[in-house]
Image (cartoon, rainbow, N blue to C red):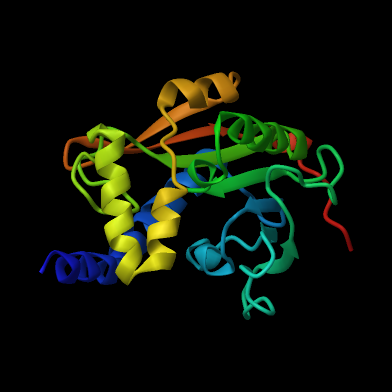
Length: 223
């Protein structure tokens, strides 16, 4: 019964996540003020995420090998798909993009050293950024959907993951590889950013550190 309920929660995640993405995209466009044609590097994202942005952009989506689709889907954006490591974007020069973007990725890259490397790449690649991560304070954890997941003893979380791994191993591996990034860590990693709190049902659902780009600093778009 517990596995059935968990699988139903996972199945319902799609529509709920889509609504959250729509809200975040509205905040992104309102706070970052893209005018059209900005060069954006999306670290660990998907082309489909950008369907909700009506402003045409020049987007490079970077993921580990095997994650990106074979080719970019039709879009009003200009989209390039690149295999690589978001913690070491060795194909891109300093400040070669207008905006570095990441939605729910920093909590998946690894330990504190890896998260620092990820943040360093965000700040190296563009003068402006938008980095979102779930909040520890939201009652339902964003990945495994368990109440107050991060407050369980570590051995309890490990036992849950072992049990889930018998039936849904890929999903259990994703949960096992997820960390929590507190607001204080975001502020430390991005000291010149602004924190926006995403609220839902009276709780902080996620944190975003962002830094808008001055309009005059926008890079000329390649022909």
